[in-house]
Amino acid sequence: MPTFREMVLEAQRTVPEVTPEAVAAELTAAEPPVLLDVREPDETAEGHLPGALLLPRGQLELEVERLVPRNRRLVVYCQGGMRSLLAGVTLGQLGYTRVASLAGGYGRWSDLGLPSVRPEHLPSEQKARYRRHLTLPEVGEAGQARLLSARVLVLGAGGLGSPAALYLAAAGVGTLGIVDSDRVEVSNLQRQVLHRTADAGRPKTESAREALLALNPGVKVVTFPERLTAASVLRIVEGFQVVVDGGDNFPTRYLLNDACVLKGIPLVHGSVYRFEGQATSLIPGVGPCYRCLYPAPPPAELTPSCAEAGVLGVLPGIIGLIQANEVLKLILGIGEPLVGRLLTFDALTTRFSELALRRDPHCPSCRPGARITLSDTAPTCEVPGARA
Ligand SMILES: [Zn+2]
Image 1: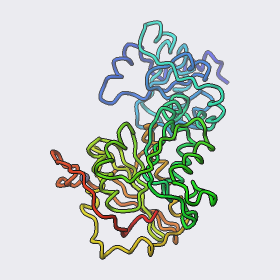
Image 2: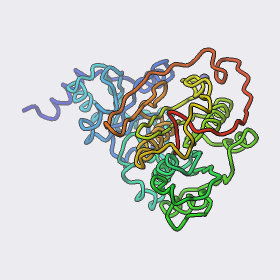
Image 3: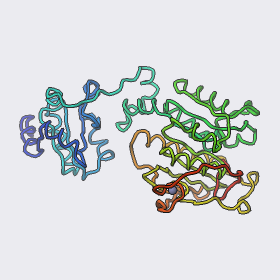
Image 4: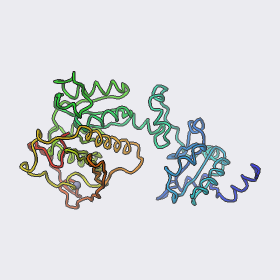
């Protein structure tokens, strides 16, 4: 059995060390290394390297494969440079070949006055509420603070908007805007889970606000009890960082798309029809917009009337939550958003499939130099569509 000293010597032989100055220089490179902080939470609370992934040594083997691809260059650090060397050996055993240890650790880094950040501190009642987020390294206190300061607009407090808004409020998205001009009808309640039977006849924005605040009084709900029109859309989307499209007709969908392209706001699309649903994230300048997918609405005669188009009640729940998931990832900057990918779901076979989407270089809305004119047309229902 090797002694501790022998283990450290062996680690020094196998894991290269890098100086803080070299790491600082690397951080501005085109592909900076992943910084992995293996200290305990009480240590990282005092400060850590900018952008570092906080993964205490005890969770390293459990979590690292999920968080860092094996081919990425990794710089591991701890407080003094010893634990990170040993962590480097473990990472080597897990198949990471480009691992270095920060010589002198965070202590040396901060002695040199190199940049560091202090994680956000949440008040204790918020720590309790979001504990299951805080233990995810991809979220943590910094991510939760980002959610709490985020502003998300949900168009429609209907079948898609209901689950999306409920879960976004539960997740602690700090400001939720809800746009809906309708009143609650009993026939909505088969899928619009924001509202209760006793809410029938009330404006949907009102019962939505009540339900969201009852769930999480720490979030702010801004209501827009009005129709989205060419005249109102820019005022409504202003200041929101992500928009969820839970609308139920084509004109609104195109209008919202054009406004989001104009303002550069990511739009998370979802729609449902009978037993089929779809979702994608439309990020201006990064992936296609809605008009790249469907350049123009289908003619009215090819679309069923809104009253005819049925939908299985749980379906908008599934699609709306996929939209909420996209929103959380976009805010947190984690994972792979559904950009350039149209996810479709068949409720009858319980099958998801995915279509690759491309930007249309001639797209009337998002091609370079396009001049967008916001316009209203008469609402129609749609195929495949959202009677959400
Ligand atoms: Zn486009």
